[in-house]
Length: 119
Image (tube, rainbow, N blue to C red; front, side, top):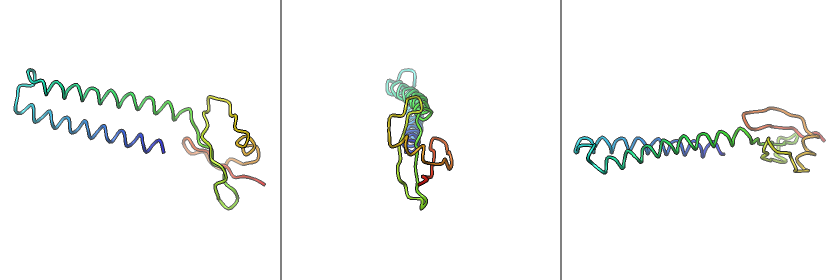
């Protein structure tokens, strides 16, 4: 779910940057950019958007690298339990620890691990 919000943020920023460039082209055609305050303010907005995108990308990648989702299913493929854990910290969830001991790992995909519960 976080990847959807990260993608949405990136698309929004990219669309904003494209619109800002189009606005700058209109200002550029009608005025001297060096003396136009509107042009300078748009340049500052574009620079801020680029900096925000770079900051979000770094922080989102750091968060994703440390978190993992664990999903436990029964034999009928019904979800029994789901938990998001920080891989840098000790797991304190007793139910999660119990399920880890009683389950078999089925597959690891990116930041999600799927387990099958054994009775």
